[in-house]
Length: 80
Image 1 (tube, rainbow, N blue to C red):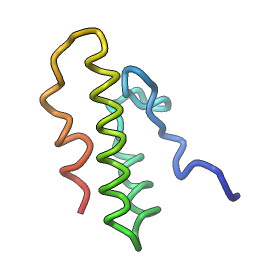
Image 2: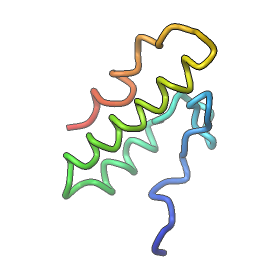
Image 3: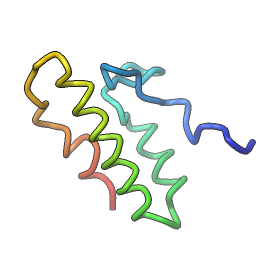
Image 4: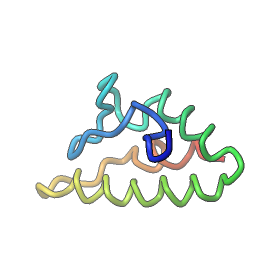
């Protein structure tokens, strides 16, 4: 269906935990679904994940908390 999300495993904001499995997003299912969706355009996946990481930093530090140290690993290290 055009316009439908590529995965049901979406981030809940501002916590950035998966709305389905409650694991830190992107969870394993979201990663697999996103990798499949961007299979022919891996640079697009890297750009998308960098942009959502930027949003996550803003949400996760909005209350003056330090930036979580695992964000690069969580959002970008798995993108190839």
